[in-house]
Picture 1 (spheres, rainbow, N blue to C red):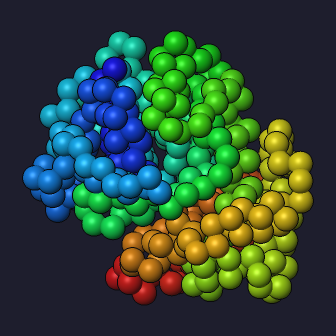
Picture 2 (picture 1 turned 90 degrees about the horizontal axis):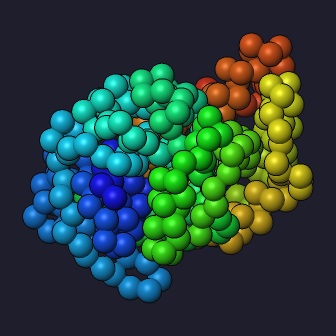
Length: 308
């Protein structure tokens, strides 16, 4: 299988590394010249609990140079989804599929607006990673199964083949025909955590142990669930969302949420696709979301201070 990874940051690089480890033909694409140079010279290195491994994987800064793919693993920040999706046509053959396991909602729709609904695989993962250098990824851990599926519900053999390769590479994964429900499932768990982490600068375990944080998480979750119900979403999360979030935070107590990593590294956050997406949909549905609106505004103020 020819796999082109568009956006070879921590998540994209790790999945590309996994495909390459299973003997697949992988090409990385990234706009960061330092990353392209370092990976080109030194290969891509991944550190997990089992140790550190390096592989030489081709990398380029232009999708035009990567060739036609069987599978495109699309892994850019949500705010860049539409712009980067417009660069995909040179990679697309007659049967090419594009897989996104990005944070938030709205990404698969943006990709589909360029390549078509029948070409897009959506997905989620609860595992987290960080870049130690432009060519070195560390796996931080996580829990649970990754979930993928065509957004039109028509899963083809290529979807199952990709899932099997990832499973052989150590990523526990399942294929579903209702992947939109799973994307909302992750959103409903992300909204009570990420913005609070970015604002407070607390590690996961510190958030879980803080009574004020837990109370705030409950208010955020209540609003997000109200929006999901108004939107007609099939809500997969049946347990108390705060209890579920606290348990997940406790299992990765020393880690930082992805939005806190972005703020700490003075990067643009994905607030618009997470809490901001809840607010946007709430406005259309007539659902009040004052807490999510406040958190969205605060994160935007924080990032505006370093994105001038």
